Length: 349
Image (cartoon, rainbow, N blue to C red):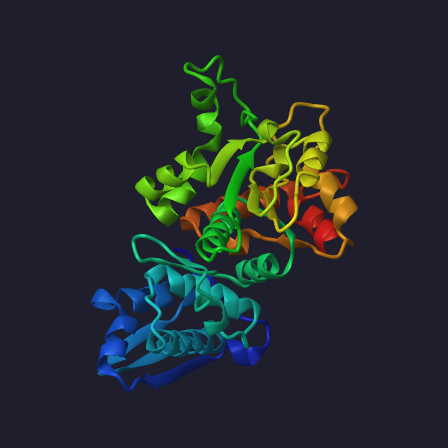
Protein backbone atom coordinates (compact mmCIF):
# COMPACT_ATOMS: atom_id res chain seq x y z
CA UNK A 1 0.00 0.00 0.00
CA UNK A 2 1.43 3.37 -1.03
CA UNK A 3 1.77 6.19 1.51
CA UNK A 4 -1.37 8.30 1.42
CA UNK A 5 -0.41 11.29 3.51
CA UNK A 6 0.73 14.36 1.61
CA UNK A 7 2.22 17.24 3.63
CA UNK A 8 1.10 20.82 2.94
CA UNK A 9 3.63 23.26 1.55
CA UNK A 10 4.23 25.29 4.74
CA UNK A 11 7.66 24.86 6.31
CA UNK A 12 6.41 23.79 9.73
CA UNK A 13 4.71 20.76 8.25
CA UNK A 14 8.02 19.70 6.66
CA UNK A 15 10.05 19.90 9.85
CA UNK A 16 10.93 16.70 11.73
CA UNK A 17 8.59 16.02 14.63
CA UNK A 18 7.94 13.31 17.19
CA UNK A 19 4.91 12.54 19.33
CA UNK A 20 4.29 10.20 22.25
CA UNK A 21 0.88 8.66 22.80
CA UNK A 22 -0.12 6.65 25.85
CA UNK A 23 -3.22 4.48 26.13
CA UNK A 24 -4.91 3.47 29.38
CA UNK A 25 -6.37 0.02 28.69
CA UNK A 26 -4.03 -2.87 27.89
CA UNK A 27 -6.68 -4.95 26.07
CA UNK A 28 -7.87 -2.06 23.92
CA UNK A 29 -4.28 -1.12 23.16
CA UNK A 30 -3.51 -4.64 21.94
CA UNK A 31 -6.52 -4.45 19.62
CA UNK A 32 -5.40 -1.04 18.38
CA UNK A 33 -1.90 -2.29 17.57
CA UNK A 34 -3.18 -5.50 15.94
CA UNK A 35 -1.61 -8.94 15.79
CA UNK A 36 2.16 -8.55 15.55
CA UNK A 37 1.54 -4.77 15.38
CA UNK A 38 -0.03 -5.15 11.93
CA UNK A 39 -2.25 -2.08 12.36
CA UNK A 40 0.72 0.07 13.35
CA UNK A 41 2.60 -1.14 10.28
CA UNK A 42 -0.33 -0.04 8.13
CA UNK A 43 -0.26 3.42 9.73
CA UNK A 44 3.49 3.63 9.14
CA UNK A 45 3.13 2.81 5.43
CA UNK A 46 0.14 5.08 4.87
CA UNK A 47 1.45 8.07 6.78
CA UNK A 48 5.15 7.70 6.01
CA UNK A 49 6.17 7.74 9.68
CA UNK A 50 8.12 5.50 12.06
CA UNK A 51 6.32 4.08 15.08
CA UNK A 52 8.02 2.47 18.07
CA UNK A 53 5.96 0.64 20.71
CA UNK A 54 6.70 1.58 24.31
CA UNK A 55 4.61 -0.50 26.66
CA UNK A 56 1.03 0.71 26.24
CA UNK A 57 2.11 3.70 24.19
CA UNK A 58 3.86 4.61 20.98
CA UNK A 59 6.55 7.02 19.85
CA UNK A 60 5.84 8.48 16.39
CA UNK A 61 8.55 10.23 14.39
CA UNK A 62 8.66 11.77 10.91
CA UNK A 63 7.70 15.01 9.22
CA UNK A 64 5.33 17.28 11.11
CA UNK A 65 2.20 16.82 8.99
CA UNK A 66 2.48 13.04 8.81
CA UNK A 67 3.18 12.68 12.53
CA UNK A 68 0.13 14.75 13.44
CA UNK A 69 -2.04 12.69 11.07
CA UNK A 70 -0.78 9.40 12.47
CA UNK A 71 -1.28 10.56 16.06
CA UNK A 72 -4.82 11.76 15.35
CA UNK A 73 -5.61 8.52 13.51
CA UNK A 74 -4.42 6.30 16.36
CA UNK A 75 -6.12 8.43 19.00
CA UNK A 76 -9.47 8.34 17.21
CA UNK A 77 -9.27 4.61 16.50
CA UNK A 78 -8.52 3.95 20.15
CA UNK A 79 -11.76 5.79 20.93
CA UNK A 80 -13.61 3.76 18.28
CA UNK A 81 -12.35 0.47 19.76
CA UNK A 82 -13.38 1.64 23.22
CA UNK A 83 -16.90 2.16 21.82
CA UNK A 84 -16.99 -1.43 20.54
CA UNK A 85 -15.90 -1.14 16.91
CA UNK A 86 -14.20 -4.21 15.48
CA UNK A 87 -11.40 -2.75 13.38
CA UNK A 88 -9.45 -4.18 10.47
CA UNK A 89 -6.05 -3.12 9.18
CA UNK A 90 -7.62 -1.61 6.05
CA UNK A 91 -9.83 0.65 8.21
CA UNK A 92 -6.79 2.73 9.15
CA UNK A 93 -6.16 3.57 5.49
CA UNK A 94 -9.83 4.54 5.07
CA UNK A 95 -9.72 6.66 8.21
CA UNK A 96 -6.59 8.42 7.03
CA UNK A 97 -8.31 9.43 3.77
CA UNK A 98 -11.07 11.06 5.80
CA UNK A 99 -8.62 12.96 8.01
CA UNK A 100 -6.54 14.06 5.02
CA UNK A 101 -9.57 15.72 3.47
CA UNK A 102 -10.79 17.11 6.80
CA UNK A 103 -8.34 17.10 9.75
CA UNK A 104 -11.20 17.96 12.12
CA UNK A 105 -13.43 15.04 11.04
CA UNK A 106 -14.81 12.74 13.71
CA UNK A 107 -14.35 9.15 12.55
CA UNK A 108 -16.94 7.88 15.04
CA UNK A 109 -19.65 9.73 13.10
CA UNK A 110 -18.75 7.61 10.07
CA UNK A 111 -17.47 4.24 11.28
CA UNK A 112 -20.06 3.77 14.03
CA UNK A 113 -23.02 4.29 11.68
CA UNK A 114 -24.27 0.70 11.61
CA UNK A 115 -26.23 0.14 8.42
CA UNK A 116 -26.69 -3.62 8.79
CA UNK A 117 -25.16 -6.64 10.53
CA UNK A 118 -24.58 -9.58 8.18
CA UNK A 119 -25.12 -13.26 8.91
CA UNK A 120 -21.37 -13.50 9.59
CA UNK A 121 -21.89 -10.86 12.32
CA UNK A 122 -19.96 -8.32 10.26
CA UNK A 123 -21.08 -4.73 10.59
CA UNK A 124 -21.76 -2.90 7.33
CA UNK A 125 -20.92 0.77 7.82
CA UNK A 126 -19.59 3.67 5.74
CA UNK A 127 -15.82 4.02 5.45
CA UNK A 128 -15.55 7.46 3.85
CA UNK A 129 -17.24 10.84 4.16
CA UNK A 130 -18.99 10.42 0.81
CA UNK A 131 -20.28 7.00 1.82
CA UNK A 132 -21.67 8.51 5.02
CA UNK A 133 -23.34 11.29 2.99
CA UNK A 134 -24.79 8.63 0.67
CA UNK A 135 -26.28 6.67 3.57
CA UNK A 136 -27.77 9.82 5.09
CA UNK A 137 -29.21 10.84 1.71
CA UNK A 138 -30.93 7.47 1.37
CA UNK A 139 -32.41 7.91 4.85
CA UNK A 140 -33.84 11.33 4.05
CA UNK A 141 -34.84 11.18 0.37
CA UNK A 142 -37.23 9.05 -1.66
CA UNK A 143 -34.82 8.87 -4.61
CA UNK A 144 -31.03 8.90 -4.50
CA UNK A 145 -28.47 8.72 -7.30
CA UNK A 146 -25.06 7.29 -6.37
CA UNK A 147 -22.58 8.28 -9.08
CA UNK A 148 -18.95 7.24 -9.11
CA UNK A 149 -16.24 4.74 -10.05
CA UNK A 150 -16.12 1.02 -9.35
CA UNK A 151 -15.38 -0.13 -5.83
CA UNK A 152 -16.86 2.85 -3.97
CA UNK A 153 -19.62 0.81 -2.32
CA UNK A 154 -22.54 2.35 -4.23
CA UNK A 155 -24.40 -0.92 -4.84
CA UNK A 156 -23.29 -2.75 -1.71
CA UNK A 157 -24.40 0.00 0.66
CA UNK A 158 -27.68 0.41 -1.23
CA UNK A 159 -28.40 -3.31 -0.84
CA UNK A 160 -27.51 -3.08 2.86
CA UNK A 161 -29.97 -0.21 3.29
CA UNK A 162 -32.62 -2.19 1.40
CA UNK A 163 -32.18 -5.28 3.57
CA UNK A 164 -32.23 -3.09 6.70
CA UNK A 165 -35.50 -1.47 5.55
CA UNK A 166 -37.04 -4.89 4.89
CA UNK A 167 -35.89 -6.25 8.25
CA UNK A 168 -37.38 -3.23 10.04
CA UNK A 169 -40.69 -3.60 8.14
CA UNK A 170 -40.23 -0.20 6.48
CA UNK A 171 -40.98 -1.87 3.12
CA UNK A 172 -42.65 -5.11 2.08
CA UNK A 173 -40.29 -6.02 -0.73
CA UNK A 174 -36.92 -5.39 -2.35
CA UNK A 175 -36.59 -5.04 -6.11
CA UNK A 176 -33.11 -5.15 -7.63
CA UNK A 177 -32.69 -4.48 -11.33
CA UNK A 178 -30.08 -3.60 -13.91
CA UNK A 179 -29.98 -3.28 -17.69
CA UNK A 180 -28.75 -6.38 -19.53
CA UNK A 181 -25.99 -4.74 -21.53
CA UNK A 182 -22.79 -6.54 -22.48
CA UNK A 183 -19.63 -4.82 -21.24
CA UNK A 184 -17.88 -4.38 -24.56
CA UNK A 185 -17.97 -8.04 -25.57
CA UNK A 186 -20.37 -10.33 -27.39
CA UNK A 187 -21.54 -13.24 -25.27
CA UNK A 188 -23.54 -14.90 -28.03
CA UNK A 189 -26.53 -17.12 -27.38
CA UNK A 190 -26.53 -18.25 -23.77
CA UNK A 191 -28.02 -21.67 -22.94
CA UNK A 192 -31.01 -22.29 -20.67
CA UNK A 193 -34.35 -20.66 -20.02
CA UNK A 194 -34.93 -16.91 -19.69
CA UNK A 195 -33.89 -16.78 -16.03
CA UNK A 196 -30.64 -18.62 -16.79
CA UNK A 197 -29.90 -16.35 -19.74
CA UNK A 198 -30.14 -13.12 -17.73
CA UNK A 199 -28.58 -14.47 -14.52
CA UNK A 200 -24.98 -13.52 -15.48
CA UNK A 201 -26.04 -9.87 -15.72
CA UNK A 202 -27.63 -9.99 -12.26
CA UNK A 203 -24.91 -11.97 -10.47
CA UNK A 204 -23.41 -8.95 -8.64
CA UNK A 205 -26.78 -8.27 -6.99
CA UNK A 206 -27.07 -11.91 -5.92
CA UNK A 207 -23.55 -11.72 -4.45
CA UNK A 208 -24.41 -8.65 -2.36
CA UNK A 209 -27.61 -10.27 -1.06
CA UNK A 210 -25.84 -13.51 -0.21
CA UNK A 211 -23.25 -11.54 1.74
CA UNK A 212 -25.96 -9.76 3.74
CA UNK A 213 -28.43 -12.58 4.35
CA UNK A 214 -26.60 -15.78 3.53
CA UNK A 215 -27.47 -17.91 0.47
CA UNK A 216 -30.24 -19.92 2.15
CA UNK A 217 -32.27 -16.98 3.46
CA UNK A 218 -31.61 -14.95 0.34
CA UNK A 219 -32.88 -17.75 -1.91
CA UNK A 220 -35.90 -18.30 0.36
CA UNK A 221 -36.91 -14.63 0.14
CA UNK A 222 -36.48 -14.70 -3.63
CA UNK A 223 -38.66 -17.81 -3.91
CA UNK A 224 -41.34 -16.11 -1.80
CA UNK A 225 -41.25 -13.07 -4.08
CA UNK A 226 -40.22 -10.76 -1.23
CA UNK A 227 -36.94 -10.08 -3.02
CA UNK A 228 -37.02 -9.78 -6.81
CA UNK A 229 -33.95 -9.60 -9.00
CA UNK A 230 -34.79 -8.96 -12.64
CA UNK A 231 -33.57 -7.20 -15.79
CA UNK A 232 -34.75 -3.64 -16.26
CA UNK A 233 -37.02 -4.67 -19.17
CA UNK A 234 -39.17 -6.59 -16.64
CA UNK A 235 -40.13 -3.33 -14.93
CA UNK A 236 -42.16 -1.95 -17.85
CA UNK A 237 -45.86 -1.47 -17.15
CA UNK A 238 -45.55 -2.03 -13.40
CA UNK A 239 -46.19 0.18 -10.38
CA UNK A 240 -43.71 -0.59 -7.60
CA UNK A 241 -45.30 0.30 -4.26
CA UNK A 242 -44.08 -0.25 -0.69
CA UNK A 243 -40.73 -1.41 -2.00
CA UNK A 244 -37.06 -0.56 -1.84
CA UNK A 245 -35.93 -0.44 -5.46
CA UNK A 246 -32.35 -0.39 -6.68
CA UNK A 247 -31.34 0.25 -10.28
CA UNK A 248 -27.71 -0.80 -10.69
CA UNK A 249 -25.36 -0.03 -13.60
CA UNK A 250 -27.69 2.81 -14.56
CA UNK A 251 -25.11 4.34 -16.90
CA UNK A 252 -26.18 1.62 -19.35
CA UNK A 253 -29.80 2.73 -19.48
CA UNK A 254 -31.06 4.64 -22.48
CA UNK A 255 -33.06 7.83 -22.04
CA UNK A 256 -36.29 5.89 -22.56
CA UNK A 257 -35.32 3.15 -20.09
CA UNK A 258 -34.39 5.63 -17.38
CA UNK A 259 -37.65 7.54 -17.77
CA UNK A 260 -39.58 4.25 -17.72
CA UNK A 261 -37.86 3.17 -14.50
CA UNK A 262 -38.25 6.50 -12.71
CA UNK A 263 -41.99 6.54 -13.42
CA UNK A 264 -42.49 3.04 -11.95
CA UNK A 265 -42.11 4.31 -8.38
CA UNK A 266 -45.32 3.90 -6.36
CA UNK A 267 -46.45 5.03 -2.91
CA UNK A 268 -44.32 4.24 0.14
CA UNK A 269 -41.40 3.26 -2.08
CA UNK A 270 -37.81 4.35 -2.17
CA UNK A 271 -35.40 4.17 -5.12
CA UNK A 272 -31.62 4.18 -5.34
CA UNK A 273 -29.98 4.51 -8.74
CA UNK A 274 -26.28 3.69 -9.02
CA UNK A 275 -23.85 3.97 -11.89
CA UNK A 276 -20.51 5.10 -13.26
CA UNK A 277 -20.77 7.59 -16.10
CA UNK A 278 -17.23 6.70 -17.20
CA UNK A 279 -18.21 3.09 -18.00
CA UNK A 280 -21.04 3.40 -20.50
CA UNK A 281 -21.38 0.23 -22.60
CA UNK A 282 -24.25 1.41 -24.78
CA UNK A 283 -23.70 1.13 -28.53
CA UNK A 284 -23.33 4.41 -30.41
CA UNK A 285 -25.20 6.69 -30.87
CA UNK A 286 -27.24 5.88 -27.72
CA UNK A 287 -26.84 8.39 -24.89
CA UNK A 288 -26.77 7.34 -21.24
CA UNK A 289 -30.04 7.89 -19.42
CA UNK A 290 -28.09 8.37 -16.19
CA UNK A 291 -26.13 11.27 -17.63
CA UNK A 292 -29.32 12.94 -18.84
CA UNK A 293 -31.06 12.37 -15.50
CA UNK A 294 -28.30 14.30 -13.76
CA UNK A 295 -28.90 17.28 -16.02
CA UNK A 296 -32.69 17.25 -15.67
CA UNK A 297 -33.49 16.16 -12.09
CA UNK A 298 -30.83 17.90 -10.01
CA UNK A 299 -33.12 20.65 -8.68
CA UNK A 300 -36.11 18.49 -7.70
CA UNK A 301 -36.79 18.28 -3.97
CA UNK A 302 -36.74 14.71 -2.66
CA UNK A 303 -34.08 13.62 -5.16
CA UNK A 304 -30.44 13.60 -4.04
CA UNK A 305 -27.28 13.13 -6.09
CA UNK A 306 -24.27 11.69 -4.27
CA UNK A 307 -20.94 11.77 -6.13
CA UNK A 308 -18.08 9.41 -5.33
CA UNK A 309 -14.42 9.70 -6.34
CA UNK A 310 -11.41 7.40 -6.42
CA UNK A 311 -10.77 8.41 -2.79
CA UNK A 312 -13.90 6.42 -1.85
CA UNK A 313 -12.68 3.13 -3.33
CA UNK A 314 -12.81 0.43 -0.65
CA UNK A 315 -11.56 -2.50 -2.71
CA UNK A 316 -7.97 -3.63 -3.22
CA UNK A 317 -5.58 -0.61 -3.13
CA UNK A 318 -4.72 -1.27 -6.79
CA UNK A 319 -8.30 -0.38 -7.79
CA UNK A 320 -7.82 3.18 -6.57
CA UNK A 321 -4.52 3.46 -8.45
CA UNK A 322 -6.11 2.14 -11.65
CA UNK A 323 -8.98 4.63 -11.46
CA UNK A 324 -6.57 7.49 -10.76
CA UNK A 325 -4.42 6.51 -13.74
CA UNK A 326 -7.42 6.47 -16.08
CA UNK A 327 -8.63 9.84 -14.78
CA UNK A 328 -5.18 11.34 -15.41
CA UNK A 329 -5.32 9.96 -18.93
CA UNK A 330 -8.74 11.52 -19.43
CA UNK A 331 -7.51 14.89 -18.17
CA UNK A 332 -4.84 14.91 -20.87
CA UNK A 333 -7.40 14.64 -23.66
CA UNK A 334 -8.66 17.61 -25.61
CA UNK A 335 -11.00 20.03 -23.85
CA UNK A 336 -14.05 18.74 -25.74
CA UNK A 337 -13.61 15.35 -24.08
CA UNK A 338 -14.20 16.27 -20.43
CA UNK A 339 -12.58 14.11 -17.72
CA UNK A 340 -14.83 12.01 -15.47
CA UNK A 341 -14.25 14.20 -12.42
CA UNK A 342 -15.18 17.33 -14.38
CA UNK A 343 -18.41 15.75 -15.59
CA UNK A 344 -19.38 14.69 -12.08
CA UNK A 345 -18.54 18.09 -10.58
CA UNK A 346 -20.52 19.90 -13.25
CA UNK A 347 -23.62 17.74 -12.88
CA UNK A 348 -23.80 17.00 -9.18
CA UNK A 349 -22.30 19.98 -7.35
